[in-house]
Length: 404
Image (cartoon, rainbow, N blue to C red):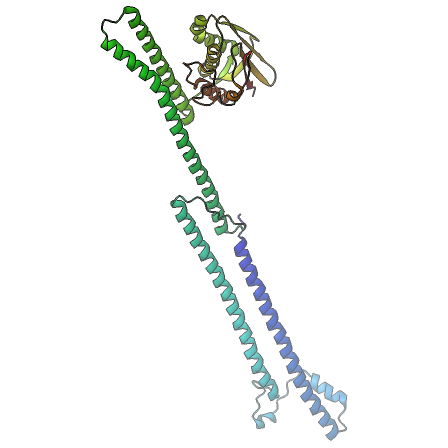
């Protein structure tokens, strides 16, 4: 149950005021009794003295017994002087004091009640102000003003509501910032995509214009143009397919079917995907490792990730070279290393090679700069991490999959 601090404070003030009021009235009553007692005793004492003077035979013991007797004695003596023992005090001064104390007690009571009412009104006014503040905060939120600081240190209902609104404000501000950042990233991505598409499309249009304008073009030149057009169309198709895959990652619309898969099977499929590219550059893939090593992943997507990494290594390798691939496992993780012996990656580029559309200094002219970004997204989804080391003698990718 939530602590109603403000209400408790209000009730505590009411209790303190009530106790103070009761104490003041109690003290007043005690004082009133002392005044009555003093007046009455002084009058009795005067009567006793007079009796002893007039009736010396009347002993003090007899007088005390008369004063302390519990019996009611009917007397008509005082009635002759208009004094009724049932509703009037014999001592007129006590009657006067009674009315003074009555007025004093009523005044104290009225002041106490007025103070309690004032406290209650202040409490209501504060709650009304808090409600107005909360209403203003919500109006500002509706206007997308997220620069409000409305947290409160108390824990009453309205303060808890304020804190929740503040949390919502922080959340909405974060969402707004993320949305703004996403829009900027989308703008940059569209610019990058536009740039990536512009070059091959321009090249295709130029070659098509040449083919159309020169129907008698030399056969060899025509065939070269057609091959170049096909190559550019293939690159565009690869770019579009990769962008679509990354978009699915961003939208969390990919359904991964994860299961235990042998690393050797993943590498075998990836090898098939790059075999043609390896043949063109006469690059040999050396694959060695623990045949029992496995990882929990989506097989097809993991093949996609490894293929992109090997393809990147092939593109940066020299003719007639090799790429070494090894894999193993221990009690903590499974590991795959892919190492080429090409021209390496510039030190500045290493920090950016997994960014979308980033092309390093040593990137090939046909590189799109998106394959490694996709690989990283797939590997991290399968509870893995990827690192890269590079120098002038080559580049080494290290992929670790935690065993969970």
